[in-house]
Image (cartoon, rainbow, N blue to C red; front, side, top):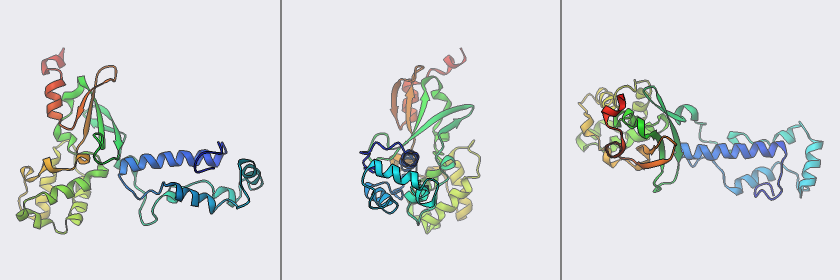
Length: 257
């Protein structure tokens, strides 16, 4: 009844748990992690292990809650993040790693997340007003979001020519270290230039932005751009910013009027 929502429960613990589940679903969308356990069997096990077997309906649950209000048995019904996370996985600093907005100079652009490989909106979507389309650049969008930076670097390492790729073995360790270094770098510079400089220092061999196979990155490691009009209505979308700017951005002269 609790798992399927058939009891129409309005008790405080249940409302809290529903909010917790909604937050965890959002975490899955942002982190693209399958380490969060949200299936009905896990939820049923959670309640079964905490509620006595003689509780068979909402009335008996309410009576039991009144009797145990504030006691450990009742408090155990309040879900915590760790109750829904694989115990081997650490909690992610979501607000830092997967922010709600992207800063393009003085402009703050909203971000949304979708985890569905193959879907047109898979990954991170940035919403840009048509009038501000020229304020964003491929160089700035290349930084993506901090939580996906390590995965992006790993793919770029694996896409290097073999003669260069051997400098970054094992690739996952190199990507982790480079992501840590770039997390402290200024984002005023193009991502590919910053990464090439960090990789050159790491390998002791010249790495250039032209060595990166950016066109082979998985879709979710490139921003999906929604262009909206003054009323917030979607005008067009895609992952090719240059194409969107050519078709939709106001002429440069119009920006100063």
